[in-house]
Amino acid sequence: MQVVVCVKQIPDPSGTYTLDPETHFLVRPDEQVLDDTDRYGVEMGLQIAQAHGGSVTLVSMGPKGSMQGIRQALAMGADRAVVVDDADLKGSDALTTAQVLAAAIQRTGFDLVITGTESTDGYSGVVPQMLAELLDVPALTYATEVEAGDGKVTINRQTSAGYDVVEASLPAVVSVTAGVVEPRYPTFKGIMDAKKKEVEELTASDLGVDTSLRQRVTAVEPAPEREAGVKIEDDGEAHLKVVELLQQKKVI
Image (cartoon, rainbow, N blue to C red; front, top):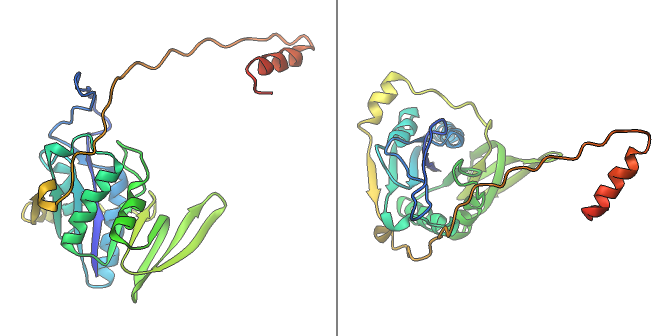
């Protein structure tokens, strides 16, 4: 089974960063880490590939930097990686991101695509669904458990009341939640092997993707300071004052 896992490199969340004064975009360092949510997708992909004698290919879009995050995923056991790094993609919206990933995945070939639910530095939460639409395959989202084989994939889809059991034929796109599996820690051998694994570097033009549709941040302003609240002394009639304040705010 040919498994593709979408991963993203992000700045270390524990660090301190600045915004470019002209573009208002985050100034990304060369040293970036694997998005923590993607580790679950990598582990899920590895388990499925190992169970069915398949392979795992990582696909990532963004500045490659030192590729520390990609190497982290390769050290876990993924076979190879495809990285799309193109300055023209800076400021891409979710749709352009999905188009780039879809083009790279189609070029690679796949039976199953695994993603996280959303990236820690973007939080759009729509790329997996867009990806499935562009690949013309089913989208199974918010999976807390995944089983694949015999030409189909079955998941437990997280809901507010528990979970739904959802099944679809392969190929398909599955987005997994944190906790779907326990990600493995890379071994020393895995870390050393990761340095020798193939990492293919592509641009948007290599994939034939239009880069003209980009987001533009017009301004960034500090959030307004929170105003002090109103303290009401309860003398037995405090509820009337609360009702009055709620009416002023048109809550009731």
